[in-house]
Length: 492
Image 1 (cartoon, helix red, strand yellow):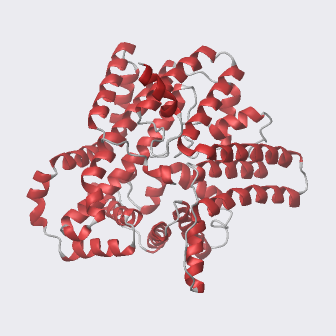
Image 2 (cartoon, one colour):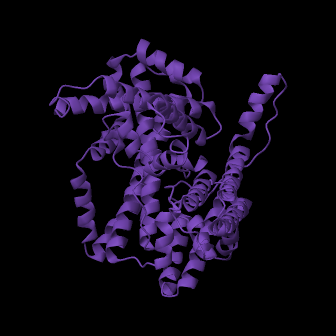
Image 3 (cartoon, rainbow, N blue to C red):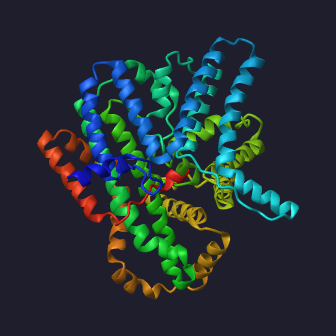
């Protein structure tokens, strides 16, 4: 017993190899304790806010150590600049305040995420040796800087009043469910809820638990499993596998990324619901999309709409003619790719999607299907299949470490396909095939089935809900890998 107690300080301290993720036992234990305290103080707004802020800062500390001071500094800077913006009348000074905020946030991103990449490019240009600096990437910096920028721009545009209560803004920017990997929650969607001091209803709690269970299943039972047992093997050495296996590896990663990222979003939205706060959905069955344009209306919705409102529109949007609109759309996607990290592969992936969006817009203008044909089921299925394979090709660029790996996979797929390995593949990877088929089948079920299932769970007696929750947690524990697998988007 004494030995166990002596390990608690070490368990609670920052460990870069063991961040406190939603799918860890430590988070489960601490969150249960936190929710108990939350229910005790929920009638006292100040105490509740201080409790949530304290837990949020600790949650971030477990993933970022001293970088928690950067997060706090951004909170103070945003609040002060927001108040200053609210009392400044001359437009030139208002612009300067917003540019200062954007400059600070983008400057942090450039230094922490891209310094070595840009430094390496500079060294190659001037033909000098490259020695990378040991720059630590603060966890979730891309997400909380985007929230910071959107707050200041919204205040400048008059879409949002400056936050007058410092704790309200501190609560908003540090709120732990979306802190590390989204969704990108905007101040205008949350500050009002914070001021209202909401309490979770029975329906919200049930919905939140259902989303948390859904997210755990997606993350642990599908994404982690197919990654460790199949996808990583293909991308590590694609030349060892047939073209069919390479294609399945690319499809497998696309499913893995969706389940991993949407699983995190589900859990983040669910955890917020347990505390009485509601976020917008971040994924809307993206593989049902019939075009690249529709895909980006369904995939990572909070990021795609953020890029639209704070990058595409400021670049000029569609206000300066069709050609300029296409260029702005392409540049927006390149910036979105660059946002993902310090790798030229992300930039190429962003450019690829930018070209897809422009190509779709151009084709839609010059070639339209005959009236009545576009709505036929076989045409919809064909559109979905083509869009999905284009997305898979893009995510191959996203996952591969370099273009050489992509070239090898392409050579295998188009030059050494060997569909004859299908029976052996199914036999050797029966659980992988089962996970892929089950996940895609669930994805393509009608929305009414999903909402109906959620509704059935929500109206169940509490004892039945608790039993199902316990069963899901048990299955997740039995399925998970020996080591906790971080969420993919934590690195962004």
